[in-house]
Length: 154
Image (cartoon, helix red, strand yellow):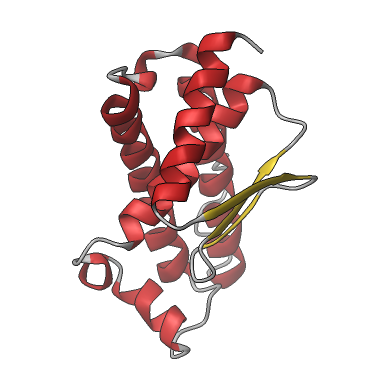
């Protein structure tokens, strides 16, 4: 791990502490917005750890915005228990929320380090891989719900 990346990871971890968010390293990455907890994958490279830490921080920033329920009304219904988690509409809003979390994570890096991580190849690659996995999931889910709608896509 290079010292610059270590320092940046430490700064993000300090940001989590300042926000009363528990963060730890474990075998599998996960986030729980309601319990305010993040687990980062202990096997990730330093660059991947930095990307993941910033992206997950982005989720907290997105979810704390006052207009969240207006931007994501179906996701709000899922939280309220009035909408199914696996509806295509919920998945589409989740994709939008994921994109917004990547952007908020990038902005946090600018705020913390005065550095636009969004220009780094490893950020671009990790974001692209994550977004494509969300898109594949959305296409599969929509195909399950509406067979044939995306025939030949992805």
